[in-house]
Image (cartoon, rainbow, N blue to C red; front, side, top):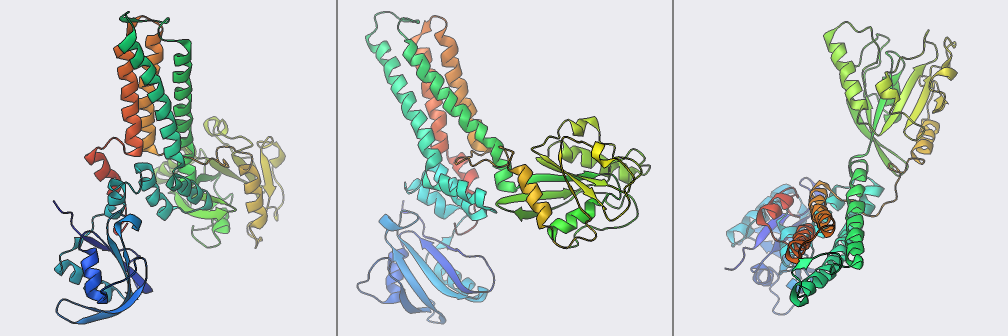
Length: 454
């Protein structure tokens, strides 16, 4: 059955100088002939023409380019139409193409076709969405590495090693007179290879711990007692009055979060309710509970201390146990006021900076100090080139469980076929990462998260 020709807007909707309409499928070449009126034309060359609807109405002056299947993104004949970026024009062109036999593309369908036609493997196809949505340099670098095939190469390397091991095991099945598979027939060399493959898979799984900080930013929580200046610090770093600042204690009841860029890092900063044990209102108690819960999963902490307060902040042991010199900066605030407490005794093992947020105009010194602490944290400042997502982690763990079963069975006499089956199952799991193992429901789920036109 001939595949449909799909169309979609490939650029963001809205007013712009240029909009790009993308078409892919068997009608692409004939429609290109129709609009350009070229008996002969060069692929991958821009042609200027009038776009006339099927009813011969002029829709726009456009540029068009034809990509034959061998050099197109999708692996099938494709056309791109460059029109003026007015949504009325775009909608008229899309509607006309549908009248001519095309249909609107589903989310991610262009990339799904690229995968099904062998232009990308599944790891690379997933990376397309990561490249589009990357919000910082680190996220972009990791996404581009995956798009170039680094993760695929690592997974395929483990798969090749397992295939070699399986070939050795199958040889034992075919040529051994002894049906019992024990240590004599399953050599130490084979066991070492399985252990090496297991180690490689665990290394990939470990990379997932960087996924959230790279994709979503470093989860940063501002903590301190009421009126210490937490909301002022939040606004100071953002460069705008995002949070309400008041002399009235307990103004912040809920968590407010925004993203900022410091150096090559994205920080998702959260302003929280003031921590203290004197809260009487239920709403304030709820805000404090939310602050503690947020702190339990944060990557980085800014602890604000009011130098003018009568006492030092009372931070719970639960939170203090999470603080170290690689994830915490103590901000001594209100140094324009008299010093009423021994701030030098508060968490003395942690880095600190003294500041008057009220009087400061340039946050650069504070941001530099934040970067200094982050630079010591390998998890937050890793230069890792591959980061697996949640789908990959689940598959890698199942593949690894099969290999651990092989190692366990090696220690006691068992049939050769049982171990060979475990290795084959591990290979099937790894195939789900790169797409060698074709599961239609899995593919639909992955590509449904893409934007229309990609």
